[in-house]
Image (cartoon, rainbow, N blue to C red):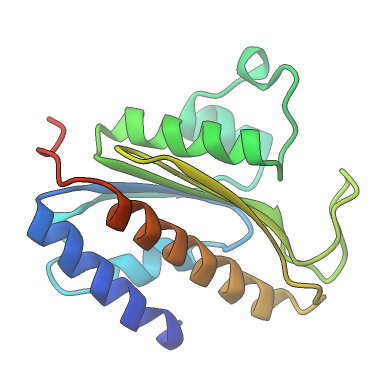
Length: 168
C-alpha cells in the first residue's frame, strides 16, 4: 500500500482544499482504495465511508442494489462500475463516488474476463468510467494496479471539474 500513499495524499489535500467529500465502493482492490485514502492525516474532512462489495449479498446489504437494479447488468462491467459509483455517492451524500470492480486473479471471473480486468468509475460533478486490463495473473499486483488506476481516474475527474460546494 505504501506506493499508493503519494497519490492518496495529493487527492486528500485537493479534496480538503475544495471542501469536497468522497465515498468508495470497491471489490477486487479489496479495500486498498479506502485504506490509502484513510491513511492520510485529516481524512475525516473528506472521506465519508467505503465498502468492499465483493458479493451479491454485500451489494444488496451495503448499497441496497438488488435484482431489479441489476437487470441487464453484469458485474465487472463499466455500467456496473458506474452504478456502484453513483449509488455509493448518493447513499453517503458525497461530492464524489469512486468504484472499482473486476477480477484480480490468478484466474478470470465467471463472466469471461481475464485476471487483471477491472472497471473503474467516478461519479460526481464530472463522471468517468474506464476499463483496465493488466494482462497479469498476479492477484496482489493486480489489486495494487486497480487501486492506482482508480486514484488516477479520480484525479482526472477532479481536475476536469469546477470546484463545487460540498453536498449536505
